[in-house]
Amino acid sequence: MLWSVNTRPRTKPAEERRDDLMNAAARLFLKNGVAATSIEQITVGADVAKGTFYLHFASKDDVLLALRERFVSQYLDRIRKAIARRPEGDWRGKVAAWAKAGVTGYLDAAALHDIVFHEYQPQSGKKHGDNIVIVHLTGLLEDGAKAGAWSVHDPRITATFLFHGLHGVVHDALAEKRLVRRRLIAQLQQACFRAVGLPPG
Image 1: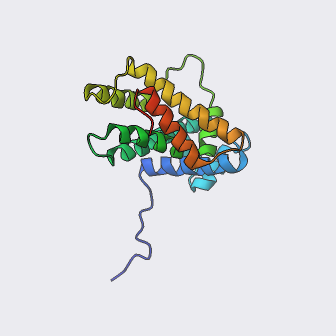
Image 2: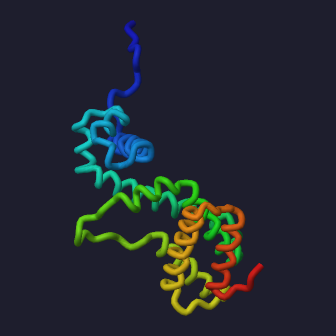
């Protein structure tokens, strides 16, 4: 009986190939910068033919957009999981979990965050979807208000304020090289409490 020496599939699913390309691009962008990275380097890093790249992306900008969307999705997933670990009626704990997960999610991938949000230049007039992190936080604030945990006049405005405020504070701390993670998390948690009318503590 003849046995095959290599039983591994010769081809990967399309989504896996796409992920391989994105992972290779992220590594190269972080190491060399976007401008210095060629599509050929990305395909070599992903171990695929150059033509495979164009089955999934039209350009490096398309890769950057895909990396941005994945970053945001994973960032929100981290926040969701942190909040889900709090007891159902622990609204204060949910807000604290949101702030902590938001800070750590940014800090743990700050270099990639800067690339996907500052290097990608969208075409003028191109439509973008709503910010899913702000949408999620708006829902959390609305649910807390319905439960009587706090009174927020406009959950969407408050969510937008908190989201952009958190990122601005973290970005400033990184730029000034005065980051103490635990202190920053505690300060932002207190800011979130004040924003929804919860007492400090």
